[in-house]
Length: 316
Image (cartoon, rainbow, N blue to C red; front, side):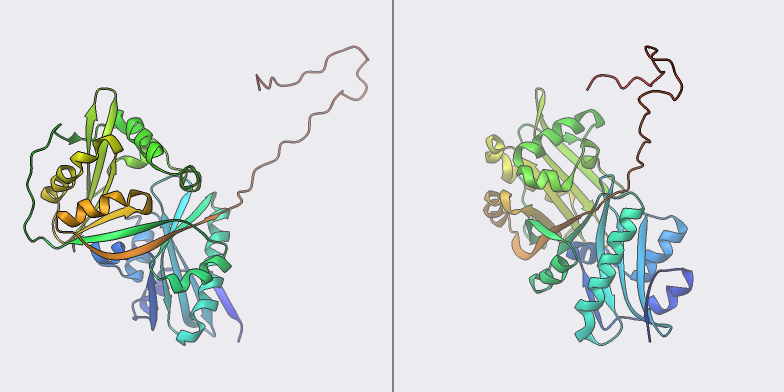
């Protein structure tokens, strides 16, 4: 029987509700902080609830074999691959998922996206993603704080809620801390740092710049924290993280990039313990660009010496 790759519809809610034999959550915190069900993600996409998402299925003889789900990322032009499921023999997982990942890339490109991102928690699956066109560009460490001995400490200067006019300053902090290749791959813009639903963000300002930024996402099962901290402000790192813990509901998961390694020991002194690591992957997508017709050099039949009417192109 021939395999069929197609977009999911509402009739697929029932088969997606059956637990798969094998599943891969590409962002562990999505599963740890929020309860996750592929059928619910599909339903929410039809009800226009939450981030726009896309579900791709693999069928054979009318039977569901596998699915892949991606959703709109924080930055424009980005989809994040978040879930892979398999309802058939586990030994066929990599081959089937590779086909679905390629299909997600093609669909994202048709919809005007410029990149696919993924957070891979299992290094043994890296080759699968590389065959599908993904490349690693960074690594994250997840640390867990379970709520014992909530730390308190003086803060100077005091943090304040992130105002919209400080987004550019936060983005400047990010570009100063982040390797250029990572910035190029992620394509973030200042609006990325704005707090979304279920989130709060704070800054530590000083004159015309931001010295630290902290965002807390609260879910039904815990909280997630992300932090940016200027090197010269590092002595205030314990107080900044302690502030975040006062605002969060345990368990709290702190996400640090490899180039923020100096903060790992600070977090450990506050009671955080290493929990997991994940590889950040990206796939660049070709986006169709409408090509303008070439302008004729001279209208047929126009007398020599006359100037044809052409649009102004402005300065280059």
